Amino acid sequence: MSFDLDPLELLVAALTGLLLALSLAFPLAAAAIVGPRKDWNRAGLAMGLGLLLGVIGAGVLVVTEAGGAWAPASLLALLLGLVCAFVAAVLVVALEDDTGWAAAIGVLACLLIGLSAPLQAVPALEALSSSMLPVLAGMVIEAVALVLVVGFLVAGSARARALQIGIAFAGAAGAVLVGTGAVGGAAAEVAGLTPRTTLLAVLVALVVGSLVGSVLEMIRSRRRSRRPVDG
Image 1 (cartoon, rainbow, N blue to C red):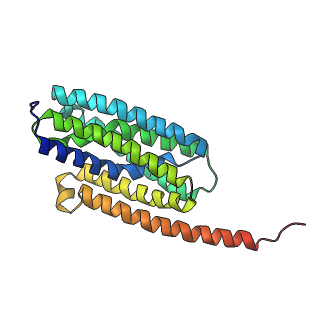
Image 2: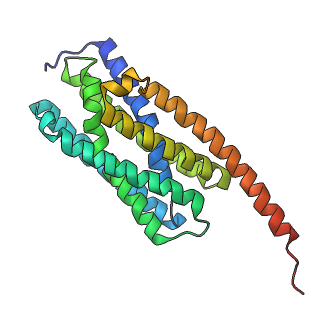
């Protein structure tokens, strides 16, 4: 690969990195909000540390053209992280009481996905350009977008239980679809499972989950209001 820079390729790589980040943001957000709220910062720290190390490591592998040797290990880490994120999303809906062990699953998911996401984005970025600069820029933009979008989702979920359930639905859907796309590769694209369709499905799951969460909260509030008051 060369260091030539084409502004159009740089723009396309940046948009691709942003699109990849949006698909991964919901599984990461679901993993971050599981467990006690005081532990959410730990998940954010794990994600940030994982992304920092992942971008540095992936950048070195791209420059040295050794990324292919580490691709299987990166894929395995991504799949394990997505499995943990899926479990965390289920626990967000199922658990009414915060538990520390659930938070540990979320922290592990954030760390593994953060470490593996930059290198997993390389094939899609390399398909857009033969230059290293757009590839490296796309990875950095993906990491920055993940931090911003996940932070926004986590901050919003702290205000409403219905949004937490919506993010959990979207996170579970995103974990399944991103994992399927990572394993299926070309077959997944032939079946129509692209980053765009994945993002669309995740957004639909977010809306459906938020509606379900709103209904559940209404039912719970009515039950509480009907309970007899002691004394």
